[in-house]
Amino acid sequence: MIFLTGSDNSPATLYIDGAWRAASDGGTRTVTCPADGSEVGVVSEATAKDVEDAIAAARRAFDEGVWSSKTAAERGDLLLAVSEQLKERKDEFARAEALDTGKRLVEAEGDMDDIASCFAFFGKIADQHPGRLVDAGDDTVISRIVYEPVGVVGMITPWNFPLLQVAWKVAPAIAAGCSFVLKPAELTPHTAILLMDILDKLGLPAGVANLVLGDGGTVGAPLSEHDDIDMVSFTGGLETGKAIATAAAPTVKKVALELGGKNPNVVFAGADLDAALDNALNAGFMDSGLVCSAGTRLVVQDTIAEEFVDKLVERAGKIVMGGPFDEKAETGPLISEAHRDKVTDYVKRGVEAGARLRVGGNWGGPEHEKGCFYAPTVLDQCTHDNPAVQEEGFGPVITVETFHDEAEAIKIANDTRYGLASGVWTSNSGTANRVSRALRHGTVWINDYHPYLPQAEWGGFGRSGNGRELGPTGLEEYREAKHIYENTEPAVTGWFPEK
Ligand code: NAD
Image (cartoon, rainbow, N blue to C red; front, side, top):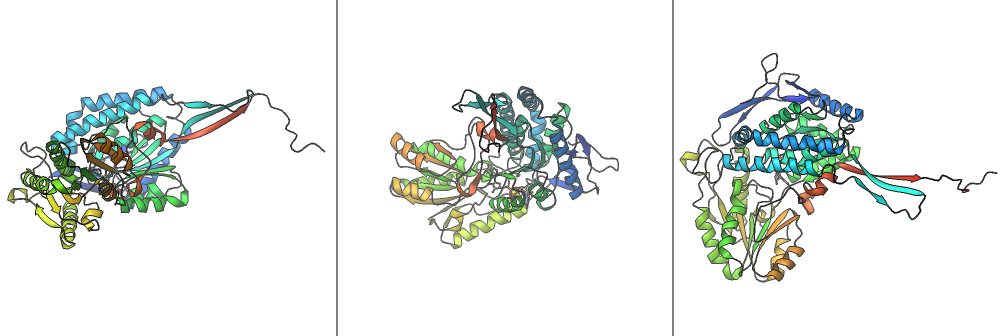
């Protein structure tokens, strides 16, 4: 599939200062598909020097104004062109994403549509928010707010929606006029490489976009620490987010964090229960639960709980797991053996703390042996302090709690250190309104689960992070507000009179 070979035959998949290059020490990483362990490709593994070069290129490009000096409309046009390219090359991109992640091709194709929409959205709004005039209360004063790009941005992204998470950062950063150094997850680098190919071919000036590949310690950490980086934007796990915020503190750079979640999906007795059940499966098991906003904490009213959970268990037990190109598959593998071990341990600890394993809790059948599969799992009889309820399992595991009335439902759903997303199922509009306002989560779905819109802000309360991606606020993250105050009739103030 990919491409680019350096002079000594090592892959040249780092994109630095407008050129493809191999790692300075020739280092490589072999990427494998978690569905069957097959080799997907070999990519360059950056050294500390390569990262330093990438940061220097981004700094120079920004300080010379090669991109920020373009008009916002020109920057928007480039994003619209990226969107068109993504549509044209959708098959190539979706295949690369499916192979890296093991997710079903049809899901990867859906992701590519979303990514094209994201670039189109930021392309369209790039010149829509130029600033504002301020009424200074004085006709001789022109006071205005203008927006400047933040500067050089370090971007660090996870493996579950590899290019989608990249797009949510790259598109607004380009719209704002920033330069950036991107480090995608080491397990899923291929679509980020392909995106750089598009940016390169569309003529983004050298140094504006830079790609470094490799692990968090060598390649990610400098992006949070470095003095020449003005902002670090991170999507990933809570513990990594804390490390990044700590590493960023001495340089007081701007930090944007999109972290994990343990998201409640609250079902009231009067809801459309067929739709609620179907969506509860989707909320928890779509993409094997490898979704930060997955509704893996089912909170169901006690009067309907037994029947609802029985049906959930029955249907969960019939979900078919398989690789990206298996047309019978309804969900895919986890990302790695190490990750599967974590999910296995998470379920074990949940059961030890008193939860009842109703279905799943295993690695699938003999046909799944070559891959990193984990069967859709339901744990019921969970108490709020069970670690499986409070921790993000990041796998296909739904925990079940019950509630008696609306007040208790809200209390349980807010009993989490996270606050990324939640769902409410009810046919009572009063309940829907009260509960959705009371929930401390960045997104609340009423009678649905999972849809998101590029026009609508995305992000978390609590330890799900800070800042917002998407929507107009997603652009503001990459801009600094500047107040320009002009006195059109300068005069002596007399504050310190001449003596
Ligand atoms: P992770 O935190 O392990 O890794 C994310 C990225 O950080 C990777 O690129 C990794 O190499 C890098 N990294 C690791 N240590 C680092 C360090 N010390 N300094 C700098 N970079 C470092 O997360 P993951 O396992 O790849 O992704 C899963 C997590 O991402 C889950 O917690 C999930 O909820 C979260 N996530 C959140 C959102 C959201 O929108 N809030 C979206 C997707 C995923």
